[in-house]
Image 1 (tube, rainbow over the protein chains, first blue to last red):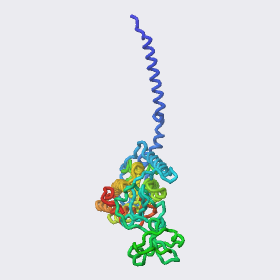
Image 2 (cartoon, rainbow over the protein chains, first blue to last red; image 1 turned 90 degrees about the vertical axis):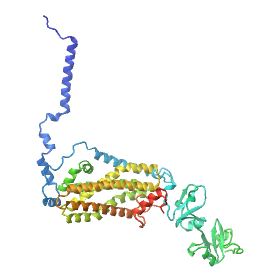
Image 3 (cartoon, one colour; image 1 turned 45 degrees about the vertical axis):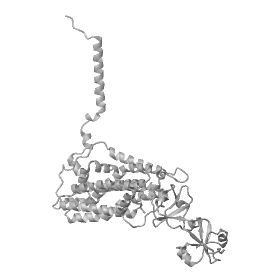
Image 4 (cartoon, rainbow over the protein chains, first blue to last red; image 1 turned 180 degrees about the vertical axis):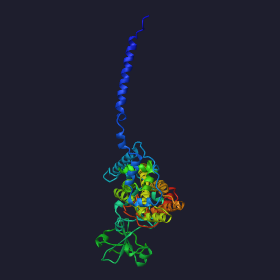
Length: 254
Length: 228
């Protein structure tokens, strides 16, 4: 009876299997070299519990050691083992902090000549804080108002605007109709006077209105601080408006 | 030791961290790491808050927010230490400081994690009152989690004794005092956000208080009245 010889395909398969086995073994050795190393290396990286306790003891602050001495000793196995997982949280925190720093710088870089930044670009009148001294102008109206004592007061002239120390930077543009929600107060006027003349005039819409006497001055709610001194030439060049009170006769010139 | 690794140790393995504080292991390293990380994180969050107004406000808030927490810590620390001492605690001042700093650091980390959300709202909305209340909410959540850490830390790090229960009450009361002092310090150091429509101010004039302002903001946000 003749012995059955392996076919050619079987021979090739056997060779292939042998080759795969050899390679897997070689790869396994490359992947875990420490397994074949002597255990002395592991001893260096992970100290035995006793050595760890000694190491921890050497790092104990003296002040805390005194406090610890008066209490029962902590059991050697009391400290939970340190986590050995990947230290991803610290890295993430660092990256988040860096990212935030960059983002904060970027959103604060002005992107147009008015100095508008991404962080302040979103316009919304509702975001304004209304408090005394808040100056506004509606988009399609020339009048400027200032908020005082819970009311918006019209600033009646450019002189008054300057007299009270406002600048164009203070003026906030709001949508039309914004001021309708609020109560209006008495207008803010500036009173003009020149040194050479005893007369006081109230400036309204570019015209000077003569205030007849002190009683009227007081009755209109003015105070001496409202008076702004200008040159008589400037005052004389302004056109006359109605006198205060009306029908007080022709206004005298300064 | 890497500063951030210390912070990670607080977050991932707090039991061990508090026990190390109890044993006094590496306290100075821990304190330095928490101080540095906390200051950086608070400064970053402060700069995000201040971005709503101007560059000066960014710088101002970045400096004032760490100052707020550290000032509150300094003001409130002696109370906690001496009350704990009275009720039988054996912890040193450094240990107590380390524990409170842990709470503050946790608050700082949480604020840092909230910062992208706050920045998102900063870029997509511009309602001042909403932004202010959003920040109050963020601070409240972060602060509550932070003081919970403090409570746990005191429990783990305290060294027994017959008056442990009383000390827990002391910690609870101290947390209330801490919150109260913190809100007043915040009110004193304001503005942190910077009111739109107003010029930059390093400090705003005193008057009112934190709580009435929060209620007024809620009222304005709901349309009841306008904060004057």
